[in-house]
Image (cartoon, rainbow, N blue to C red; front, side, top):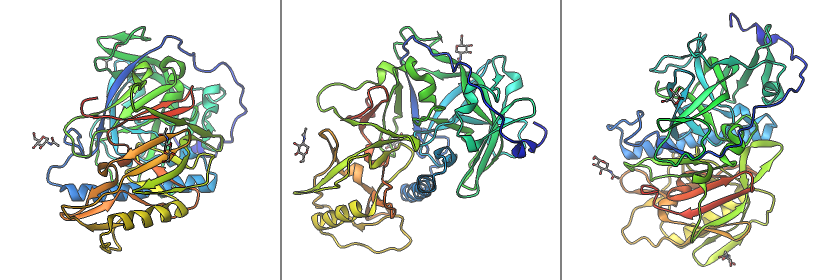
Length: 444
Ligand SMILES: *[C@@H]1O[C@H](CO)[C@@H](O)[C@H](O)[C@H]1NC(C)=O
Ligand SMILES: *[C@@H]1O[C@H](CO)[C@@H](O)[C@H](O)[C@H]1NC(C)=O
Ligand SMILES: *[C@@H]1O[C@H](CO)[C@@H](O)[C@H](O)[C@H]1NC(C)=O
């Protein structure tokens, strides 16, 4: 790529030859998910206090909400909302032949998997070399007139002079990434999974040949750049996401189990049969994918119980996005107002005001807090009881804050990752359902 001339190239006409070969053999495997602030993370800075980490995570979460809202409200493609260092969980992938290890953000809120590539025209700093496609014997370009290229949202796809398929994403905060789509092997160092009938397994690793990914040549990010992550894995529901590409080979299923913030254990992300959660206490609710925002996983929150009180949202068509990369839970104004009123009443401790706080309700820690039972009622009888660890963050040495805040925007609610700690959460795209079961994620 010698210039950015392609930006002004017109879109080429597109035919639709057959799509990615679907792999019919079922594969099952798991990878570690590392919280960016956990002791296992390369981002971990032992000198940063837990309070500071929580504060930063809350602010990161807010800026992620801004991107979500931007894309939900402006009818822009949701593909335009990816930012590195802005998701909370990292994972390792290997790209190409020979395989190059990359630490990337795992993001259920976006679709395209991409890494920074050389020759890089403008990249954010990373402490490992940029990916060099010429050194991989299995890399090939995605052609602009191929079906694979049309999986990019139209306004973000451009044809190069030699029929290359370029992508161009612009973000609300003036960040952007421009690059080229290619095919290469993506593998996952696997744990002790059964790997039965896996597509291609050697030495406990599992490889998906010809995976589509983005090679970012021109990436500017206005968020913090610590040089550790070098890209992102898109786990959204859209057609380009890793989940959609693996498709039938993982039975269109994945699950995760997130350990608490400061745990020394890693969380797990599972694919295929291994992802299925069964047994006592499993509840399921319909998973709703909207054609207007095909990336996001929606479920429908019918009501919330706080202590003895329950209120209904009166909504049915998918009113909350479930996301692993957003820290806090955001509720849209009418739902939040009911929720916060009930919470304040039940907890009964005076609010500590701090206008610079990212939270809506903080109060002084007291040993005898009367924390009410909180349950989210999702459509289909999926009642999910949230424990104090799913609702409260210790912020400063004696301040507890609710990890549920107002989105301030009608029609935008997100179930964040604090609320999902110590639950196994299964996404079954084929069966169109989302399942939860409480679990000790350090052991599972
Ligand atoms: C995984 O196995 C493939 C196929 O044998 C091999 O080429 C590749 O180097 C292995 N990847 C890793 C990360 O070990
Ligand atoms: C994690 O490990 C460190 C050092 O071994 C220890 O001090 C700390 O208590 C552990 N944290 C948890 C939550 O187990
Ligand atoms: C879920 O909670 C609602 C409201 O409390 C209750 O009416 C319903 O019976 C519960 N469903 C199940 C399956 O427990």
